Every structure is written in structure tokens, then in C-alpha cells.
Image (cartoon, rainbow, N blue to C red; front, side):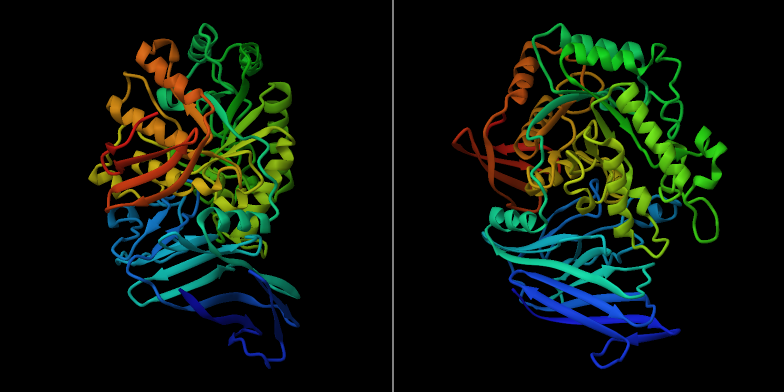
Length: 549
């Protein structure tokens, strides 16, 4: 399928753009191969900038060959593509809105929008039937690894995002794993090569406030939903409070008036019920009107021209605290000490993490910055649980206990035309479901997969009961952090039955998942030892074949 890799290296030295040759007298490469691992080390006698590494392969795509493209971050759509598919970035009207695609890779990658042209971050695989060729970076600390497949020109390549890097002596340009075999075997070997410890958690159930109330929460609402669990015989593992408790994004320890008794009281009540207490934060974010931004403008991450870098459009616009500034690090340590020690929360959901590594700086690549950001967050949280979200996947491997694997689901199933024009990170039930299925290999290897919530309620939602039940089933088949976002005290007997089935820790193993047609997705699995098959239409959420859990 792939053969004859050809390496190309270019860089700037002494003000000149130079193509690497073995006898150049400045740069030497050590290209070491150890079984399935290839490591390329660069050593230079003079500082190098604008370093560009690319490896092109001779490629023999077959008509049935599938290319799995891992999206840039947790929300980015990720799936097996075929020659007739397109990878669509931002459409023209979205591009006209400043910072619309800030959470994506639109400044890192070209989107031709042609059929058969795709790219993948950190790892990918090519599939012919039940045979898989996996290529994956063993470390993104030396820059993101981007894989490119072009069915039209029978071309395959990898390149490194080394923008901003200055190499003054030695630098590991690439640490690549290249393996072939069955689906589970190639992923087992890949994660073993990264030497990532198995997640300490395996299966968790819970509640989050977000998809019922969004930011319109209060102490009364939270305690009412907690009371509904306490007054039943239903037990969940984690009860999580989402966005809306804080006065502004960035002012995490400043509470709204609707939380008059403080967060310690709520955490204690959650513990009395018997669950772990979770709290949402976007630790690197600060609202444009936040106190932290007003009092410490020097803490903001800025563009090269000195203007604060906008991290996106949420909350009417928000900025990034630069974690390399000592004041920011001290401030965030205090925030986490307050949330985890003084307030007593056991888990934090850390969101919008991509924003820390939007631009390279201080001689570091985006990949290195993102990896160091995850190191810092783990250090701050000590041994408490972390649920990662809005984060590039590979830097989160082994650093978080749980991780979102797809986009936020919507309160409806079909996307409309406007939705589909809003980029690959959009709120979308089809995209969320698609990612749950095709990133299932991360569960139990990199962390516990969070496929996002399911719903059973009959109010405040635009989704039929059949679609809600299908969403719940797919979440259970492909993830192990199973959150609901309902007031369970309002469940009917039928809803209670489905909910109890969702809470049960069944023995589930997906044996295959693939598209049968452009929109028909098939999942084959073992359920407590029995072989099952589920076929549904990803576009409209209609079940075609199989049972729902």
C-alpha cells in the first residue's frame, strides 16, 4: 500500500533557504530504524529556522481503501474516508466572520474541497478490508505530525508543523510508528510503543448540567437535580456542574449571586449522595470583560503585533492567558487549589484547551506548547480526575482520565444546511456520533472515551424518542463515560428502564464499524458474549437494523 518513503528537508540558515543534502557541512541527520519505529534526529552547527520536513510515499490506493483521518482536536470530525468523500473546511460566509474557525486547523492546512483529498493529525490508518496500516507519531512535542492522502494523484505524505521552531544544536524531527495488522493489534502496539499507562478509570456514569440549562444554572437548580438522584435508588459515579456558576469566564472563584452558599456546600451534598463532584472550567480562557483580563492585561497571549489573540467567539469573545508567564502559572495554581482543595471537587472538566497553542512562540512549536500545557494542568490537578475537552488528541494521551472524542451534541439529530457550513468543530449530533464510532480505539488505551451526553427527557429537546434511544445506545457501545443531562426525577417508567440499562456495566466489544453507503453506518459488536449488529443512517438518526440497548 505504501512504499519507498522519500525524505525532503528544507530550512533557513544564514538568511538563505536551503535544501538539505548529506554533504552540506552544517546539518547532519541520523535516521534510525528499530523494527516498526523510525526516529530522525537533526544536528546543526548553526541556528536553523523555518524548518520543513516532509516524507512522500509511493502509494497504491485500491478502490476500496479507506483512510482514517483523525481531526485536529476533540470536536473535529474524524472518520474513515473513501475516494468519493470530501473534507470540507470553512465555507465562504464563515470565512468572512473573524475568528470563526479559531478552534480548528484552518490556518495549518489547505482545504481543496476535492473528492479524495484528506489530512489527519498525529496518527492515521489505511484500511483494506480487515487489514490496517497505521502510522502514528510517538510524540508531538517536536511539532504536530500531519498525514496527507490524495486518492486522485495516488499520493501519501507526512509533514511536521515546525513553525516557530529554532534549532540551535540537536532536535528530534520525527518519532514515527509504522505497523500493519488487525485493528486492535495495531492500536495495542501503537500505545504500547508510547509507553502510556492504562487509564486508572475504566467505566463511569454521571450527570452534567449543560445540555438542559446551559449557562442558566443556579444553586436551586443544581440541588433540585441532585435531589432527584438522592430520592431514587439510582446511583451514578460523577455529578458535574458545567458553565454558568462563575461571574465571567476567567474569574473562576467569583460566583454568581444565584450560588449564595458557595460551591463547598454543593460539593458536600454531592458527596453525601455518594458521587464524585465535578466542575467545568476553561482554565486558559478569559472573557473580554473579566476581572482577570482588566487587572492583568500583561498576562494575555498576544499576536506578534502586540494585540490580544482572540481565541474564539464564545461568550461574545474571549482571550487566552499565556501559561509561560509566571503570574499566570501562580494564578492558575491558586484556582485549582481553591476548586479541588477548598471547595472539595474531585474532577474538573477542562475545556477550550486548544487555545493555549494557537500560535507558536518562544522558539516552540504548537505541538510542544500543547504538550507542555497538558503537563502543567496535570501538575496543577495532582491526583484529581481530569476530563479533557476542546484539546488536540495526542497531547492529551495519558494526561487526562477522560476525554471527549467528538463535537458537542445538539438538541436535535439532523444538521441543516446552515449547520453543515459552520466548520468541522460545530455542535452536531451526527458529527458527535460519527466520532464516537471511529475514535473508539482510544478508549482504555489513551484515556476513557467521553462520547458526550445522551438525553431521555421529553421537554426542551427536538429529538424523537427513537433518536434519543439510538444516541444512548451508540454512546454505550463506543464510550465509557456515560453522562446524562436531564432531571431524572421527571422520567417515566419507560425512561427509567432505558436509563438503568445505560448505567449497567455490560461487557461490550465492538468488532467492526464501517460505512455501508455514504450515510449508512454499521456497528458489529459483542454484547455480554452475544454477536449483535446495528445499522443506522448517520445523517437523519434513523435505525435501519438491530436492537437498541
